[in-house]
Length: 399
Image (cartoon, rainbow, N blue to C red; front, side, top):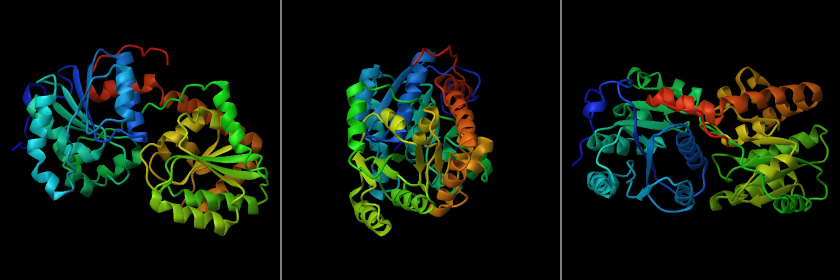
């Protein structure tokens, strides 16, 4: 049985210091291969390392899908293996055998860093790192990562904890052992590439399905209880009641089956069936930023919400609930764009106040666009990688 070492045990010749030896071989762990923000962020990290370092990259993934297809396009080697779920007793019982099987599949026997793309696979990173003579790191992308839950998933047995927002880091730092390993790690978030004119025109035509609407609120992301898009419907209703005529709501994302009833009930209760357009999954959301006036995030829990950053990089105002990532994205302008509570009326009040000062809003959006393009750029992310892993870097290639 593989034994995951505690924080006092060193893992091979590279574990004595974070600064002594350059990282060369990286192994990243990713469970699923479908769509999702965490997978997109990992792809951006891999792209930054490819363009700005000589690090050798490899991904261990639990399945094949869109994510592994993208890895193939990028030329990043991938091994498909088994990543049991730590929270399930049966999976924990077969954990050691699964890790040994993964090790046999890998094309190398030594590595410098094993990095879990989310906290759920932290035990796996620690176990594999010990066998590979590597150090382990965990990128934490979920606000659910409180200190007690972090210990349950053995984050304290990894060398480096990389929460992707200030708020998540603060939740970990109440535990001294976790605090010593914690370093905020901001993602690289880039706007998707421009689409052909016919694709943009097709999206514009779809928006004409709501003739009463000539101004659009936009929400991007899979519809479900965590992102609570039903509250975006309530924000729309409140803005209409405040006199902001002509608004509609465009929802870009598939809907979780169990959330359909709640969405339908909210639309019916608010009387906006003729103003809500569900677009389903949109492979490239960039043209939507040209068509929308305002973007929203009504999520209850995030890490660093990429859709908010993308909206700001596109020069669109974006308003959000006070979930993780708000401080990192908005800085001192948080009070103008982030509601004080998870309440649709409170969020609508923020939007209303800014819309009544169009010149001030335009200035704020310009400042936030500049901030986002700098703070979450590939070059800035490469600097984050250098600080975290001690790798030598060069200027990233142009996107």
